[in-house]
Image 1 (cartoon, rainbow, N blue to C red):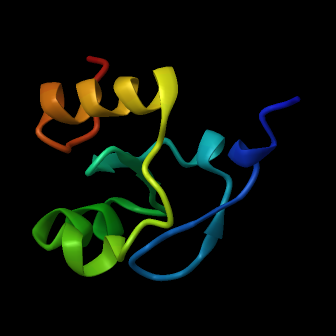
Image 2 (cartoon, rainbow, N blue to C red):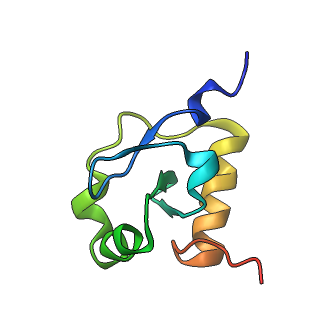
Image 3 (cartoon, helix red, strand yellow):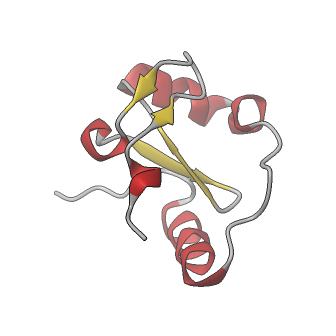
Length: 83
């Protein structure tokens, strides 16, 4: 089993297909990670996340779900800053 789920993602704001590993811009909303092509898309998502997040198919489970919940709680849904 590999990390193939990290190879493709779609920006929830503009619909552009992106590589989340290279995107570098992310947010966590209700335990789900979202990746963005630009800071503008990220800012738009932050203004109304429920509008763009839609209904998730299923909640993340196991350690990954717990990790995403902790990140969202610690950062209030904003991506952590490394500097």
